[in-house]
Every structure is written in C-alpha cells, then in structure tokens.
Image (cartoon, rainbow, N blue to C red; front, top):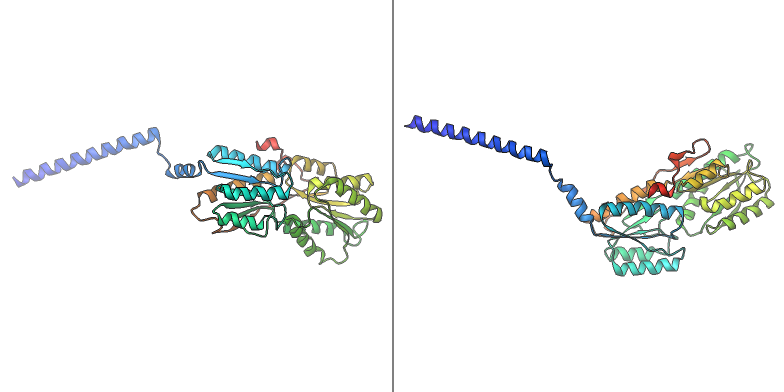
Length: 344
C-alpha cells in the first residue's frame, strides 16, 4: 500500500508540474501576442499629464523665444500637459506683474527669461517658496532656482576676446584698437560676458578698448555708435557685440564705411539661419552660437525631470551650460543653423 501511495503521489506531482508548465506557456504566449505594460512609461505619462507650465519670456516675436517656445510646445502636446506663454513684450514692469500673478495662480513650473540679474530675483524666490518650480533660460538672475539652462556668458566673452586678440595683437591688424557694444548693462549676458572679455584682455595690455557702449539691443543704436567710433578711430581693428540681432547695425556701419576687410566683428546668438547668412555675407566674422534647438531640448528634459520629482521647489538647485559652436565662413552649414519652421 505504501508503494502504491508513493506512485500515486509521484504521478500527481508530475501532472501538476506538467499543468504549471502548460499554463506558463499560455501566459507567455499571451504576453508575446499582446505585449506587457511598461509601468515606468505609465507612471511617467500619468505624472506629467495635466500639469501646468508657463513661459515668461523677455518678449515673443524674435528667434530665441520663438524657438524655445516651439520646442516646449511640442513636448507639452506629446505628454499632455498645459503650456502657456505670458508675453510682457519687452516691458520689465509687465513681466514683474505677470510673475506676481503667476505666484497667485500657482502653476507647477515657470520658465523665466530674465531681463536682468535683479528685477525678478525676489519674485523668483517667492515663487519657489509658494511651491512653484522655476527653470531660468539663457539669462540668469541673482536668485538661483531649481534649474538654469543656457549659455555660459563668461565663456562666450572669453572666446570673443581671444578671437579679437588673435586678429588685433601688435603687428597683426590695422591697429590694436577694439570696440565693445553691450546690450543692457545689468543683463546677465552683459555683466558675465564682460567679465569673460576682460579676463582675456587683461592678459594682453597692448589691446586698447576705445569704446564700450550700451545699445539696449537696438540695431539702429548699434549702427549709430559704430559710425561714431569709426569716425574717431578709422584704424579700428576689432569689435565685440553682445547679440547678433543688435549687431546687424554694427555690421552695417562697418560695411558702409568700407571697413569690412579691416574690422573683425565677433557676435553671438542662437544660431538661426539669418545669423548664419550674415556670416556667409561677411557681415559677421565670428558667430558664437549657443544653439537654440539644443537649449530647447535640454530645457524640455529639465521640465520633465522637475515635474516628475518629489522634491519641493527650491530644495535642489542645478544648472547646465550648453556647448557653444564657433561659426565662420569655413564651417557655416545647415547643421549649424536652423529656422523656426524646422522646430515646429
């Protein structure tokens, strides 16, 4: 009897094992036929869906802000969160009021494009204290927020100054005279870029800065300033501008004076097609690009990261200075340049 019981138990065990193997095969076949849900993908999308992101630019209507907005809008549509723009149209007062309103509205995240290093500093700190996460794009304030994505203006200044030194050191150019056009003296692009410029120029005392004036980002004012500088210093060798849009005026004055082959003009910008065309035409000798499409993609990654994070606003602060590309006639091409239609 014991032997028969043992045999029956073995047969039952074998049957159960066979049944389990068969069932596992059915489950596997089912999974292969219909796939498996990825819980990480589900969590990622459900967490982002319905969130609210607001972009506060200096102004819409120019290449930088339109480019970033196009890239951000695409991700918001794909991941089903709300994306809005509050356009102060170059007015710092209007931007301040918009930021105050947003603190009351409490979106999940604000993307801030600062007019200068001080105007929004206190309000950005208040936004974080209210639980709103903040990413600053390309222009920093004195307040460090959850994230900054953009150019390292000190690095731009160093590259621009070194290029001018290489062209205008004694015996290399028409003279050792250099002019610098800034934008708004309190903007991050000015204060940090000037620091970079003078870090290099201070090592080359032969280089003479004969003019340093603010253009307020206005190409007409930039043109007028350069006309006067060239009248006073017809042997000018180099010029450093702060932004390609304003520096079209500087380039125009240089060309009209017949100094295009003499004055080495360095500028910087987002790398749009118009800026590249100005390199091809010989209006800009060196164009330092901070690559708006790349910035937009990094910005999108930061938006998603912060919206997914359980950390409170202001708890962790980070930044990323994106790579720069020096564009000259020798390397200007479609890969280095973009149009707004490319980003939509």
